[in-house]
Image (cartoon, rainbow, N blue to C red):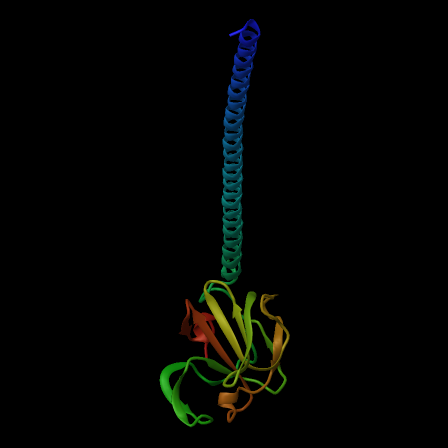
Length: 238
């Protein structure tokens, strides 16, 4: 082989070596580039996942807080409503003093002093109704339109109208004494009003279930929710 041939051969070997090195270098570049891309993908996926978890946790915390707030608000409203209901249903009564002690203090007659039907718990004939029933009241003789007055200071508990009793004014006179003025034609007071002894509370009308009797005030008194003789509790006599 000539010197020129040997020189060409060396050049080919060198070129081949360079090509091989280039191929290896390209391979390494591709390999590391691929790994870097994978690492980036992993990092991106991890970041997205962490962001989603964080957002979900925040949303859940917000929902929990909202539920707690709603619960606290509802509870507060319920407590306020209960307190209001208790205040509304609280029973108001007339205070008792030396001037309104049942069986001891002075009481005015609600109308005239003449009674036409006395108090009894026994069964007696009711001519209007055509039956027998107890008469737990005093019927005071009146004239049509006559003024009816409060027997003592008191608090008006209610004003009602009944098919049997007509217009009824119910007054708490203190000491657990409640009086019912029945058969009024007109009423001058309202529920919740305070009245003074002798104050006009209405005018006499007709007591429907005793309509066959002459004009009279059907007057009932109760102490501790039990019927008592009005004349006894007022310290009067028939």
